Image (cartoon, rainbow, N blue to C red; front, side):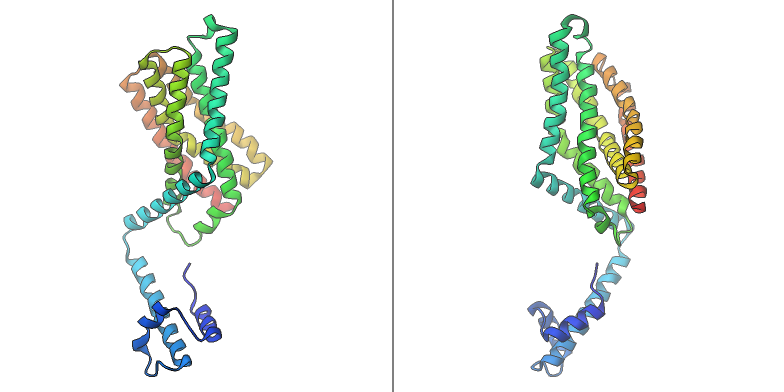
Length: 281
């Protein structure tokens, strides 16, 4: 947010000085640049003119440029936070552990009966663990006030949400590929099944990350009631589970197209809904 002229006046009156960059730009504004008072007035006038110029430039920017800038800001912020705090790695370990636990139980107890359904079980457990891991991450971010502070003055907040969701999807890609490979390896499945698992996870993961943000926003807005509503929203992931299970049988273009279209549609819906819920907080 740009500082107000009153703030600039009080700051310059107290310090009687300014940064070299502003003072050098304001040199032509003052007839007696050696006096501190005149220099402060020159700096104030120059800063005020710069603020008005920046506001005019922002107002003249096309909507596409503003949308791209806000999207890029959300993308960079999310990647930086996940890389610094390492929560994406912890979340990956979580849903990989759940998936491999399902694999171990299946192989150890009922190897013959449940072996054909093993990839589907591992895929579904990976999906649910991914949703819960990302929901906890988004909950921490929203409760910290970061989203609210960055939403102030941003007319295109939806672009910011899309940027953060896209970055969350990028951060999960390596772990999703590893999960698909491990599930196929532990079940001794052929390469087409491994490719089907990876394709299903990659296609469904954008909407699953959006679903996680939606659940976290509900928890912030409604508390314990939001937790119940968020749990009720988990069946929205069932279409991805159904399509993913179907992909393990046959890798068809029709199934891929259906899953991709459904994932993109739900991603848009979850992003817009998350934006609306956060505006109520």
